Structure formats: C-alpha cells, structure tokens
Length: 220
Image (cartoon, rainbow, N blue to C red; front, side, top):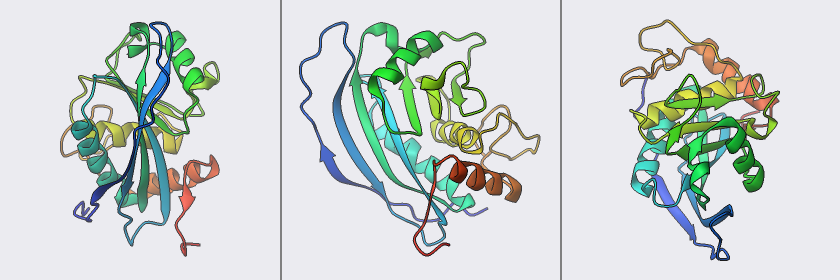
C-alpha cells in the first residue's frame, strides 16, 4: 500500500464565530474552523467530517496532524476527506468525558453534521476503551450517538485510531481482522494501517448506502 499520496491540508477559511456568552450549565459552539484537504485523483468517494473538541483540551496542531494521517490511510480505499469542520465547544465538566447518558445529551444539544468525531478527555464507559465507534448497528438504544466516534485524550497513534474508528462507522460493522498489518485489528498500533480490497468495498458500499459518502465527480 502506498501512503505517499500528497494530501496537503490547507486551512482555507477561519470562521471564528462569536458565540453568545455561555453560562456554567450551557452547551455552546465557541468557534468553527473549516479545513479543506486537497482532493486526490484516485478518490472515487468524498467524505465530509465534523470534529468537535472541548475548549482548551486539544491543540489545532495535534488535531490537524491526526486528520492528515487518517486521510492518508483511508485514501487506499479511494476515499478522499475533502472538508473538515473543526468545532470548538464549551460545556460543563460532566460532558468532557464519554459516558452514554451524558454524551447523548451533548450530541443532541449540538446536533452537528455527521459523521462526527468527538475528542473528549476521558471515558466513563465500562469496559473502558481509548476510543469507541457508534454506527447504525450499535445505536438502537442511543440514536443521538449514531455515526459518531469518541476518542479520549490519551489515545496513542491518534491518526490511526481515528481511521480505525471511522472505518467501523463507515462499514457499519464492529468486526476486527486478524491480519498482522491490518487497520482493523482489535488493538491499533503504528504500522497497522492496511485495508484489504473486501474491507474497502464494504466501507464504500455501506457508507454510501447510509449517506455518509458522496461519489466524486466523474466517478460514476
């Protein structure tokens, strides 16, 4: 697999929207930044993402580096991440951890375009994972969280984690692979970034059927 496809991430628009002052018990969007990622000639489908993070928890540099790496990994399936909405949010401390009852409230209040990646501080779920993906198949009892990914601040290899969890959402599957270098092994790690042809096909087909991908111009 060739991950050298140039994917220059360019910050083309900074929309620092002045949100109204928010109180200690309110949830608010404090700032929006729009990133456009250079389209690749090989992309047959386009993916638009929303990434939400808490005020003062994550740096733009870390987020952008992880998104760049995640985009390179998904490019092997002819998926181009063409636009990312970075949304900085303010909310009471209880929302800064992933916990289904509270996170449902957060996602419902924000109503952000999906798929959405939430970058949180910690998890209160049991069992506890560094990241969790919620697709169509595992969201019947928590519809507000459908098509979202939740990543804790301590997650290692953040770009790989983002690609892994996004692939779960896009394939609408919790399945893992036993192949040594596969992205979908149960444990993510540096060097485990390959997706095979069957996984790529399922990713494109399921995500397209669920309205999460759009065909690239001229790809039909």
